[in-house]
Image (cartoon, rainbow, N blue to C red; front, side, top):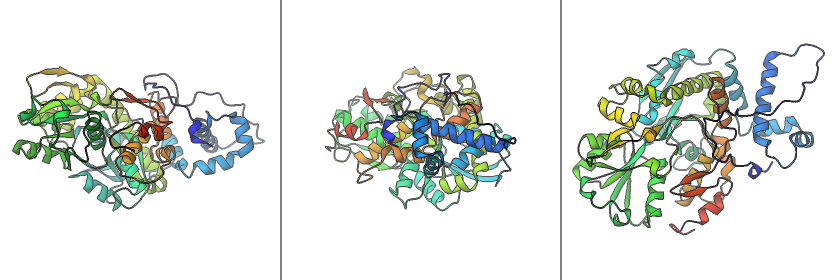
Amino acid sequence: MDKDTQAADGGRSLAEPNALVSHREDSPVRLPCPPDPQEILDRAVEGAILRAVINQAPVSRRRFMTIVGVGAVTAALSQVLPLKAVKAAIKERGPLEKKAVRIGFVPITCATPLILAEPMGFYQKYGLEVELIKTASWAVMRDKALAKDYEAEHMLSPMPLAITLGAGSPPVSFVTAAIENLNGQAITLHPSLKDRRDPKQWKGLKFAVPFEYSMHNFLLRYYLAEHGLDPEKDVEILYLPPPAMVAKLQTGHLDGFLSPDPFNQRAVFEGVGFIHILSREIWDGHPCCAFAASREFVTEMPNTFGALLRAIVDSTEFSAKAGNRMEVAKAITSQRYLDHPLPVVEQVLTGSFDDGLGNKHHVPGRIEFNPFPWHSMAVWILTQMKRWGYVKGEIDYKGIAEKVYLASECGEIMKNIGVPPPSGTYRNHTIMSKVFDPNKPVEYLKNFSIPRT
């Protein structure tokens, strides 16, 4: 099957009432004896995934399946989609293989669903005994994940893609089961730059992002390049843990950073910086962090993985509601979790904040929570990894996206808790007024003059 025959979703929002698969099934074949209900559900899950994948094929689904064979297609899909885990996650079948689970997290507001699931009891709801382990940096997170010190991780959304490809580490297959948050970042500058807001004036400045394989890095590079600066030559970009960014901004060893919150607001709170722009002004609705796990964990402990994913989706749905944001802020701001002053976290989660220049803003979408891991988001991330030389050679953009981002699995769980998922897994995205078509990643890269490709 040619993956490029899949059509873009056209920008549908998660608020649409469409189910992930809305096509009617053909009448079932009559069997001489009552079939096993578990087998029926197995086939239903496999059928839903098959329909989602081949629905846009140039031949009819019935003709396609007749030519190729259901068994052959299912076997092929099993190489890129953990079907066993999908079934377990949806059906909650069988006991948990493991109740005690360790999850690493970096203390930022992007981890809200993963953190909140503990004090709100979502993990306990699904029979899990989760130990949340505060982790100092993304480099440490990657190392801990590869060493199997954690069963699951709070990662930056590009990290599972990079680890799977062996970019910056040995290649190990990881998956993004859900997106932790959308937006939730900002460019913060030193007070001395309040009269140098035009990025064209930033040559020679020193910036920081939290990790190479981060949306922060790719969005900052994109923003600079769109203003005519080559981030490889015209500025210096350091990789620092967010707390170090605020400290170095205060001492003047940094001119600015693109960081996850609440550290942008913390810089304002401490009087050492001001918010230049929110990251949503670069790409409104961009992914930031992800709930991730190794494919080995997903396939060997599918019931435990399914329980974790259901807890995260539940927690994400609770966090998404504007009316819950103050309660969420109080639940996650303690020393055990974020360890920031409550007003800092409240300003981030409610979107009512001071920018450090004497202005007050109300931006409800400063941070959003929606778990669906769009395959098109993964394709865009891969284009930026290719653009800036983090990966070399030919890239199977859609193949990698569909292997790592578990959109079908997450969509089914969303539907089960009453949150309509999108009707597709690809859509166009607009980044700084330029439309990205995930069906044309190679052509997209050719349109950039910095760097010249």
